[in-house]
Length: 438
Image (cartoon, rainbow, N blue to C red; front, side, top):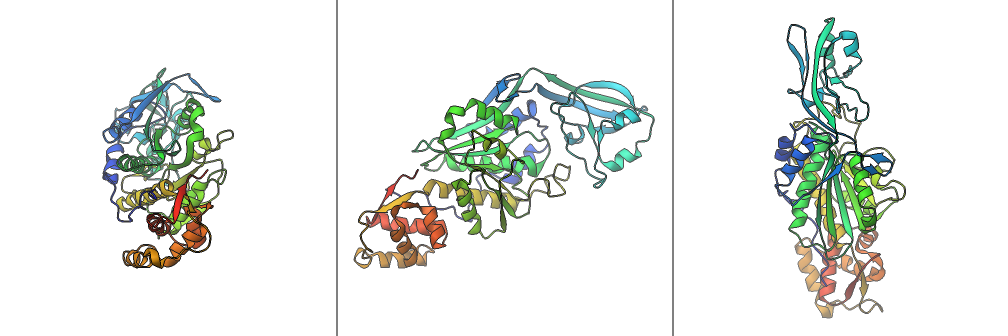
């Protein structure tokens, strides 16, 4: 039986222009719900057979309820002489997410209670939301706010908060086996290129890739609003969760920072798999422990679910100055960083799909390699950058049914792909057979 797909080529090119997709999605105003999420998913559906689910407002999901749907058409602050000072049409970060409609003249003192700025970054617009606040607000550069000294201003927010639905997209690619890999990205942020769109772009490219490859595991890709989207999906799929063998949340994977991987809550095998890939990738990286704050890994790893999911990032949320500001734009996200992130996760998915356990067909003693032509085969493999004699010896020594191929690679201190090539030689020589691991 074949040992599975080869490891990802480090020169593999993503199937789409990742940075081009980020630029296309960037202007769309997204939130937990609404037209922006649907527009984003419609663009993704050009490339993959995305199933879109609508969950009505008010639906009970675990300890939560699906919120009212929010849509916005315009939002402005004008001086009383008619001059536009802040306009949502110029930058969708100008409005606090889920701001309720308002049309009135307000004093500067009242307006100050609804204005958000960054005094330490006076040129930037912050990103703020008020999902459950029943309020309104504007975000603007602190430098602009300081120039606004009139006694009164005209405020107009043309928005709707009404019964609707929460929308998410899902693609499932079945494999030969019932177990699955779950990949998620959040789709609820407006014009933020790294913290939102980078994860969406890389996840889409991976979905396109996996769709055209043979698969032993199934692959499920979720494009969901953060927190409430994950909670909603979990509530609707409790009977299915036991099939998830590995999982990964993708976010902030487009900047030039080093890779960071946040471990799963339970210390699942996804942790060792990602650590192995990063260690042999040549990229600077850091492995960080699980904590119950961050992205949707905290929902998937919450009590009673505790799925085997970690979170892959480059720069960690909240630690880079561009985070949740207008500086998280298309220039901040680098094409080469997106491509590297894609390559790392593609390599990981190949590893997961080939990480099986092997047992010797005759496990008594060391087999004779010469009469099976394996020394010549190894020489040919070595010339092509393949397996060495030591790789084959490690495989044959550890193939007792107790070690996965990843555990063998870790024990031997070599990249997974080298032992995978040794597996092919040993399978062809009928020295080992494959068994399914737990």
